[in-house]
Length: 104
Image 1 (cartoon, helix red, strand yellow):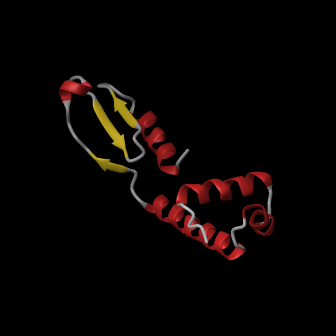
Image 2 (cartoon, helix red, strand yellow):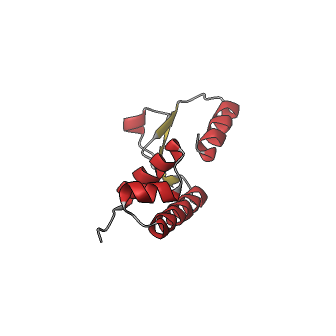
Image 3 (cartoon, one colour):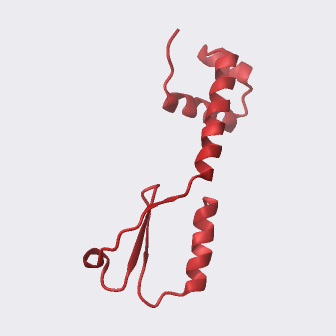
């Protein structure tokens, strides 16, 4: 029996959803047992739920030379960066953070 890697299973299961296939149909196409497909789907769902509960902010560093005097940069776990210059609008920043926390 061939051992499947995580990336391959994510791709297969996303394709199943996109194409509207049942687990039985995907099993027939790939030769992977339905039980294995169910197990992977459950595992990936649980990982996704756990990841949603984690904080997206990892580290805060003040680096005025890189950011410019008075600017704030926040690096998110995803690799995205949020830079706020001096004189920012707090209300707009609050709305932006709300969108980021929801995982737009």
